[in-house]
Length: 259
Image (cartoon, rainbow, N blue to C red; front, side, top):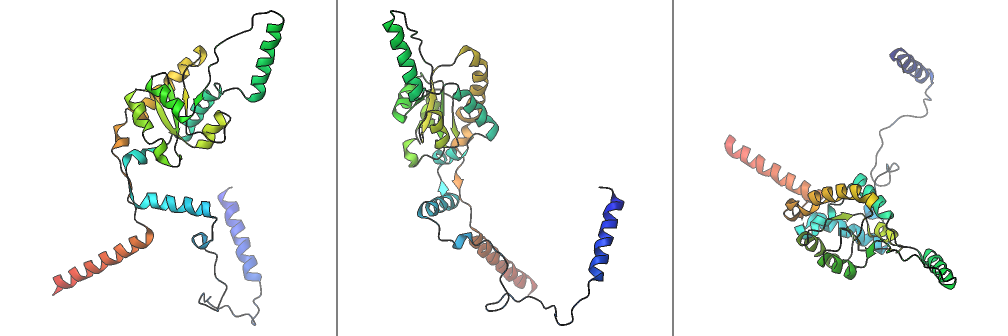
């Protein structure tokens, strides 16, 4: 909008406000927000809400992880893949989704029909994602896994806290991803703690190599992840107390120097 048009609009508004006649019966007074006076302004009262139990636990856990010092082995789970990278990884892994019950039924009926007609059925090895913590662990230990995705919100965390170190030791690229529900959707489950890819098709090999290289740099070879300790953030009340104490000490110092 041109500058002249903006100024003309502002002038019209000022004129309209000036033209309004004020009623002398209504006297404008400063608002008083003390108890029993004016209606209180809108505030964020979410901290006073009676939340459901599971939400309360989520909120408490989040605050607790901010306040206490979190060991590096647990803190690394918060360093998830950023949105663009995670969408690339998930789009690649969607091609290797295991078959659903209906798809399996159709495949088996087709094989049965071919067998009944004395034809040779196709017995190609299916390249699909592997899931289940014990199964994925075995694949990593035997170096059959080519890529491992670990959910960042596994509870209790002790179930998977050792898995990143195992992947590093076996030189298997891995990453932390949001969240266990998305991993579960890949393998037709509600949730999944971790998912592993064991085989890659020729057409996806170049894309997979690029992703694996990036993930190795970001997680396997990134030693800062195992050094940085999380938490240790002070709450707003404590911060105000510390600031007040600091000011009081500064005033005392000034008094001493002025004497």
